[in-house]
Image (cartoon, rainbow, N blue to C red):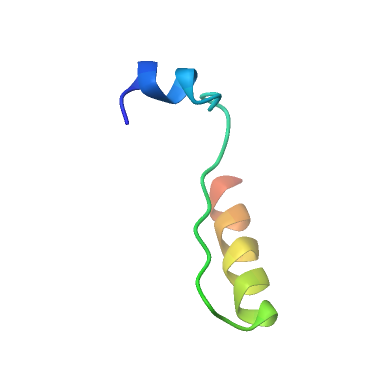
Length: 41
């Protein structure tokens, strides 16, 4: 989606898109923890 389409859909630039498949909750939480650690620098 273009930036204009995102805004029209109510998506702000500071939002994070997360796509989750059929996994155990432990795997999902581990992935989120890893992403947060990397985002902290």
